[in-house]
Image 1: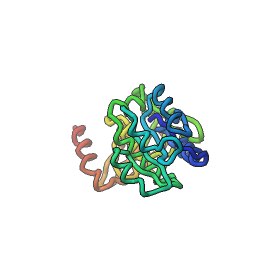
Image 2 (image 1 turned 120 degrees about the vertical axis):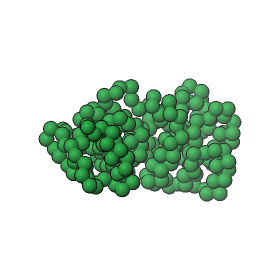
Image 3 (image 1 turned 90 degrees about the vertical axis):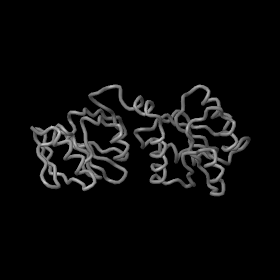
Image 4 (image 1 turned 60 degrees about the vertical axis):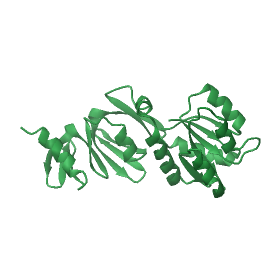
Length: 237
């Protein structure tokens, strides 16, 4: 998602820019100190999501949003909770109270991601059927689908386990799962997504995953077991 930050406080902008930089599914296009400056950016750029401060000089965030004919998705940011009703009446995705924690920021971004039109979500993920990129260690890492053994979720992070090692990236399992090819991967537990080509066996409430070297026995969650067994039975001789 292409992101625009609009806030008249330099410290607030710094915090938001830091949060955005840690999200692999967000691309910061610009940070603006006023609604007037933001308007010029919106005229030139296709913005998907705008983090908009409410109390600003010249023009408030609420009045600015009302002035836009085709606004992007908006998440309001403010130090004053009494503006919440006005924000939601304008169909804002979410309303964040300063100081904004990473946990609360991530929740708001996930809500915005879920509201993205399907064609936009697909267009901003991959142009290739063989690989994708994630942000890890302050750089973009190329991950080939065929190299993935399984993916493990740990709170706000996911660990992508591969033949060659692992990559840790800041995002949710839900977001990553939405962008994986459905015919190649399957969620088997709230904490695990497996590569279907790497499944060796399924027994009871466990699934065995193995590549050329590494093998791992993973649990199958009760809410995912029926779907996995249906998939296995469809391919049974």
